[in-house]
Amino acid sequence: MLGVVLWSDPSDGKAVFWCEDQGDLAYYDGISDGVHVDAMFEAGDMVQFQVTTHQRVRKAHDAHLVQEQGYAGLPETLRQSTAPAPESPQSAEIIPFALNEAPRIAPRKQARKA
Image (tube, rainbow, N blue to C red; front, side, top):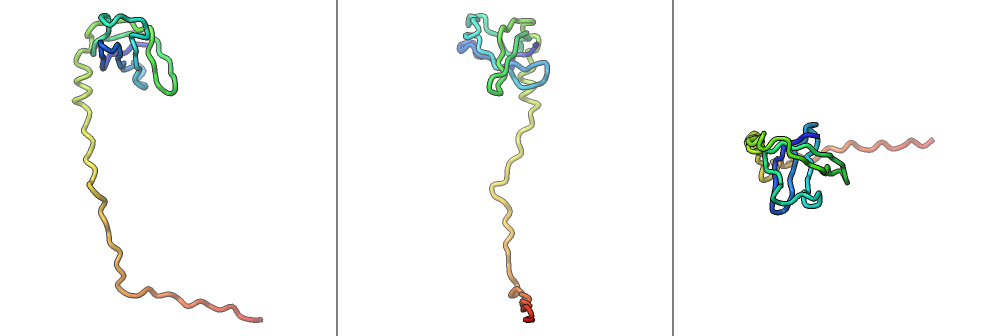
């Protein structure tokens, strides 16, 4: 699968890939994949990798650089295009119940005796 690195932490050897199938993001652990920290990917790099799903989380393996900084502006573009969440009201609008007069209850009909 192809993807673009959205985030990476070279010191920790981890990265997050946006996948070409537009599915869930794939999480990459370069250290457990045998990649030296100096060779870690950077945000904006296009990579090719294998993907597996473990407990509903996509994991990327065997990642290889396809194009360095091919999509360098993508992470920032995505951040800017995300609309801020609308502010939630501090409290719900409370509508008071007011009884203007006593409720009218219809009298029960009594069963006839045969």
